[in-house]
Length: 136
Image (cartoon, rainbow, N blue to C red):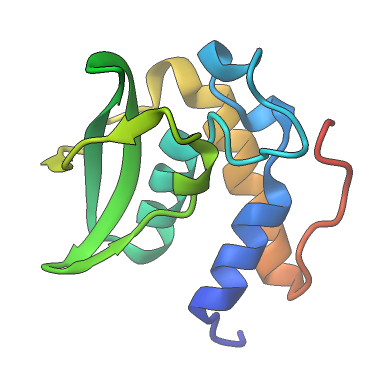
């Protein structure tokens, strides 16, 4: 097996996003121009599967009102990776994160998580990121 780089992992994750891996509550705001929208929960879980570390969660606010939660990963103090931060527009502010325990199962995102995880692993195993239309 060829070792993966962080660039390989990021490329595999980003090329595996689609409307079918989006969180259900974000489906109305997901589009190919913003493929990171609604992907944070499943991406954080897949990255945790691959690299370990901690899951981080922060509140998303618009005009001071909490509108959502955002997930990303922390690997050591000061080393955080957030592959979906660009999903937010200028009116959305992500607050500070806190570590959270990994759920035993992804719950309501089980199907989206399994789909994304399968695509990412296939892309990494093949050594070539999956190339398909984002709107699938």
